[in-house]
Length: 239
Image (cartoon, rainbow, N blue to C red; front, side, top):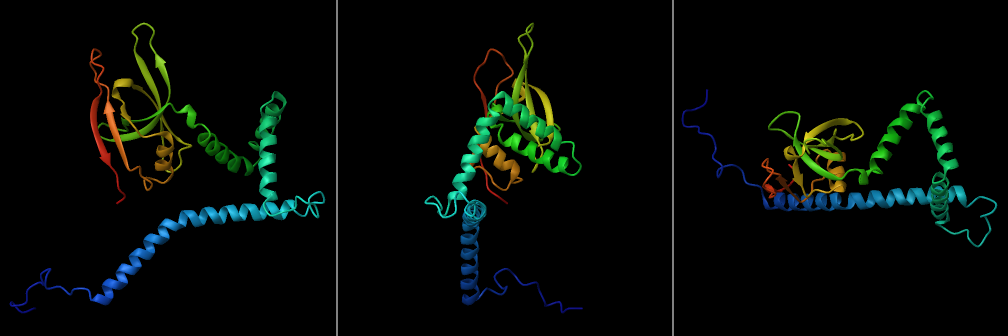
């Protein structure tokens, strides 16, 4: 048993860091902050250098490139861009689309290959379909009091009553190629100034890459009023 005179140390009585520890902590924090800022740039440079080097290693040894005036560093990347352009022209005509559809059907039936191809196809389709999302909204999902983010993909109208429903795709995190679809009353949606690109970054990062701020508003249920009910403007920061 401890002595009755022994008392827990107060905050002021606790051991304070020395000057050396403070300087060490300062340098460690600044180095880590600098590293986190440079990592995306370094990764981008590394990936580009790898792609250019790999493309050059494949293209430059070819007979019609080797020992020619156009055999210079970076010719592989130019060749890849030209190939992508030619393929884009090819699939823009009927024959090209049919050929690519046939190849897609074949790949989607091969064992093992169909799994990799299916996931890749859904991801690229989603990334290329930004313009199919008319806007980003929030809605109470999956229960009242909990708000989820979704993309409006279309609308359903009632010609008799003039009533409309918004078709909202609610993606899962961090894989937005799967999710839920909901038909929601327009006046139950929370409007936001968040654009599609920032919303996709938010989903892919699992909430790590946050927009600096976002605003939310909702149309009032009274049809006569056209003014939006402003919910609030929120400042975001990572935990």
